[in-house]
Image: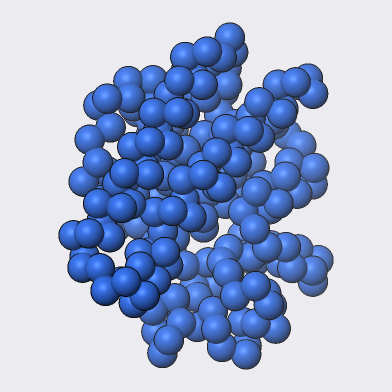
Amino acid sequence: MKLFEYPASSSSLRVRIALNLKGIAYESFSVDLSKDGGEHRQPAFLSINPQALVPVIESDGRHIAQSLAILEFLEEWCPSPALMPGSSHERAHVRSLALHIACEMHPLSSMKTRARLSREFSLGDIQTLRWALHYLEQGFGQFEAVLGKGRQTGLFCHGDLPTIADCFLIPQVYNARKMGLDTAHFPRIDHIYSACLELDAFQRAMTPMTG
């Protein structure tokens, strides 16, 4: 299996974590988002993913984009160890946690959004950072509340084994801390983050980001 990724991308980190948790061997191909206007915008990569986004996996000569779609594919393609719980209600809950990160938090705090704010509205770095931190803090507060309400919240987002939700949460927490957000206000999230980082699969996945 091939993984086309930008090593510092939180979306790419989601996929690396899942691949490691499932023990799937893969070959990484770096797509530099900052080189020459972004390699993801060049014809060679657009032929792989016209969305001009990473990550993308290649399996049996076919390309799959979007991190949640990739993780769902991996779950079907390699069902053990499972990253989704057994019942339909539980799986929906895990998806909702992942989608909260992917749809409500990541887009509003991404470098792409901050760059657009800078270009269109002449906002400085401090202003765009404040924008991102606002939505990160709001989003984590909502996520923390859901964890507190969830009957199945355990050592991880859902139960005592990592799921797709953890694959999404950990990259977002890592980036938020890197941007200066104090996550101590979210004790459940902090506890899950610490539990995940004790696992080799998460440690190895984060190596390209931390060195």
